Length: 120
Image (tube, rainbow, N blue to C red; front, top):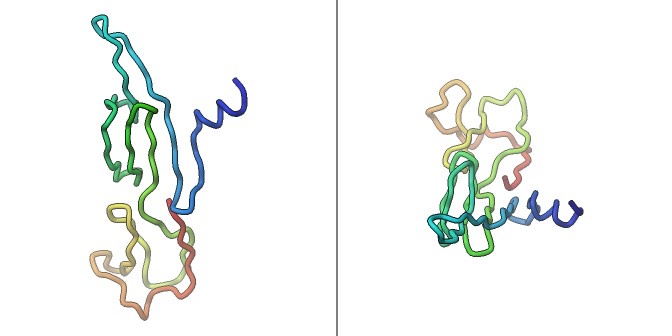
């Protein structure tokens, strides 16, 4: 397997808005007919399918060329230890909550001043 094909199969490309991944279209002969599909986590998807995987924070689309997925949302790469607030992920977005009561949002004056945030 050459390096270019391996890169396409791995399909991970860093973009300004996050990671982008690709999967090749697959075919199968069903009752004498060739059926094209994409595979995502064991699921078969027909071309023109699109969906959002909120567990992996990816928006994916299956078309005649294959499966393409792009990350959605952001996450905090590093948080300051010793603060009264922590960062949690809710529907692919991050929000600051109190460590002592994670049902309450963190007041702005308690949020860390220096944080690093990146696309997922």
